[in-house]
Length: 70
Image (cartoon, rainbow, N blue to C red; front, top):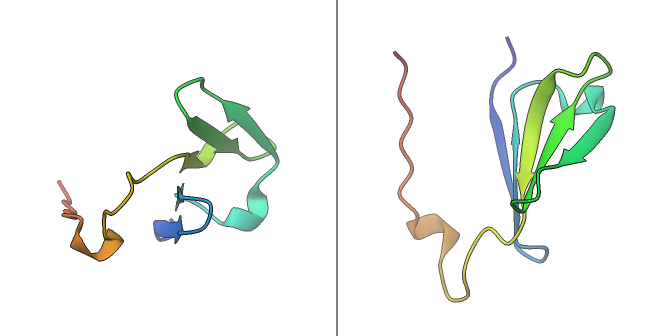
C-alpha cells in the first residue's frame, strides 16, 4: 500500500490527496461538487482534487489535522 500524499497548491487553491502512485493517473471525473476523482486505468479511485479549498485569509498551517488508524 502506498502512503497517502497531500499536496496544497496555494496559487490554484487546490488540495490533492493521493492514495496510490500519482504516476498511475489515467482519467479524471468531475463530481459537480468542486471535487475531481482521479482514477487509474482500471477505474479505481487513486486520489482526488478539491477545488477552492480555502477561503481567503486562512493559513494552511493553522488548519486542524487529525489522522486515525482503526
